[in-house]
Length: 137
Image (cartoon, rainbow, N blue to C red):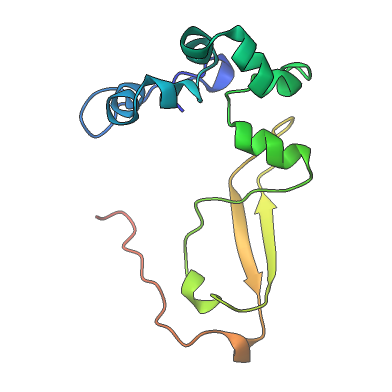
């Protein structure tokens, strides 16, 4: 989240007009924010606790606080897909084949994907189609 440094470092302005990292710290505290920022984690909890929590990742050249749950899952062969949208109600509690088609990102370890559910038409839940107002709020 926020100021992770490196190529992905960012600290966008949040709803309050303050940077999102400041909003997060105000709402949840510096200890919670430290889980997302290596330098803050070490300042708050110490280097020994950091290495105890993230040493395995650091030994592989990975900064532990940058999306540690993603690294743990991917390191164990589990692919994560998040922030799904669309007509999800049509397949709730149904068996279907799930496919995710990523963009081509050279040396990337994640990307936006086009997600598709393959399901027999007779098994689709009878719910209204989701309507999107593109370009409007």
